[in-house]
Length: 189
Image: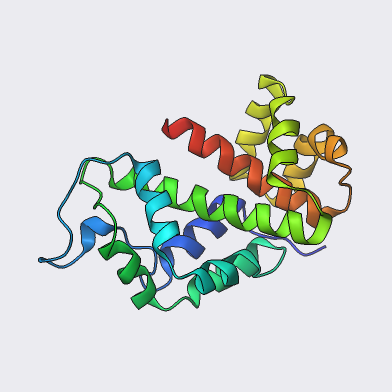
């Protein structure tokens, strides 16, 4: 199997490297929406909801690999993100980094949930229920996977995957991405 870059590198490149597609609202031109107090997670959810439904659907259905969602984001029209940004509060200089993490986690959550549901019939409710049974020590091992290759992370989600009836590598990769996103989002609260 060919070596794949660590999940952290792929996500960072996919979400922030492609022509500024995921540039956050603090970088908007003067005259756009004012800076409002909003949590990074609330900002990320606002941006996701403000994207056109067809764009969200394309991102969610982009394919089962990290590379697929990365390409979909890279190919997204920057004007769509600017439109979403114009409808949401802006990140402040103090919250910009956390807002980027929240955006990445929000995109990863929606993408992984969509792919797991479409390909493996695992609903977001089932994911949440199975996740609630994952012990803290296992969650810490999964969180460490953000800096590992997808292949290295699969073992950390084994019991979680078995609880959902998932066993093939693409399903484990999706589940890993979802779990890591949940841990990143939880750290922001």
